[in-house]
Image (cartoon, rainbow, N blue to C red; front, side, top):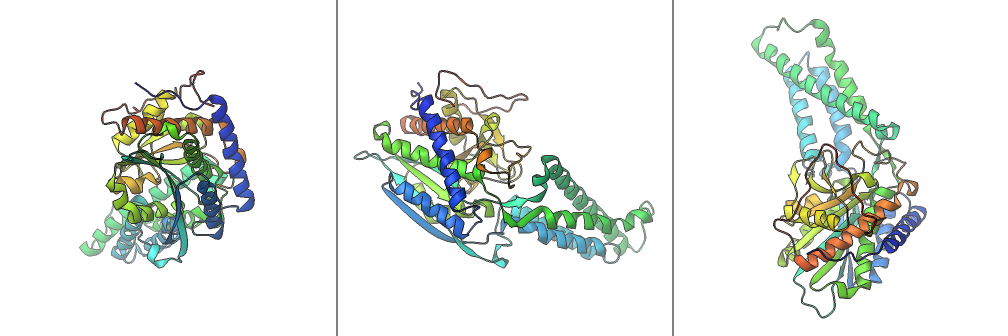
Length: 432
């Protein structure tokens, strides 16, 4: 039997207004928050001071990060692919090797979020904020971690122009890379065989350098490292919402019986989940001592896209079924059918925990097209959505209550992908 809805519609709307006000204050006082920057630190410090009013303990865990680590594969492979294409007609095996190395860098650095390039890049200090609250005098048998990240991203130049441009550019890069790889194999065969393949026209051979130029120019200009975006939706919306859920339970202690509630505000997520990875490394044993589940709250911007993350890390990593069911059931209890979300390009902080064997999932709400504000200068307070924040807050509060009452479900409902999937709202329930 589901728990009763704890938050009234009016209360959730009022809290969502406060979330937007807090985001507005942070953007005004600290501005964009590059991973490892002073503005990221000041934002973390400000959020930590707020959490100290409600938490039993608040820790700031520092770690070292290469801010450009995740996305530096763009310029590296852009240069490598260009020179590889220039060598194809003369030393095809060297060109082939350069293309394979480029694909390897993309796979490990972005496909798997490994720190392949990080050792060669400038480092800074970032930190995680780790706040705990437990109901007084109770026997704590489990833990739930609500996780958001405080940093914001470098601007994606082509998404700034429009979602169609970024799709075209990504498609062009893929076509150029695969075509060059094919030619490198054919040309290498010719080189070692000592005879020319007659079915390859001479004009096509000369076009290989053009493909390298196209890939190189797109890759070198894809990320604008000189410009950090405001990051109101991604991810002040998720971070502040997680804090508000934490605060709500500290004000309503009788609603929780045996669960420790943790609010984790990571640093440097946009650098490749570096804060979440550092946290897992520092606290893995602690998380394994008692049952722990993690909900990453990331980008609560577009109500129609509100969903639970079922697969992450470029679609390669399935999250824990019980964690997915916990969030999905909370949505159902609030009259919301959450969409099943697969993160096809990129990843969320939940990945770091799932990889470590800690049940995790994420609550997100962003147009996968992608949204016009995604990693662009348009991610301002004006792009935040009160209805999405209100609903996300209500679902998260419900998820915490359900977890405290029933634990992690073993065979609970999970979302099923549908051709036409729409969110359902109940006027009687506490949604914005």
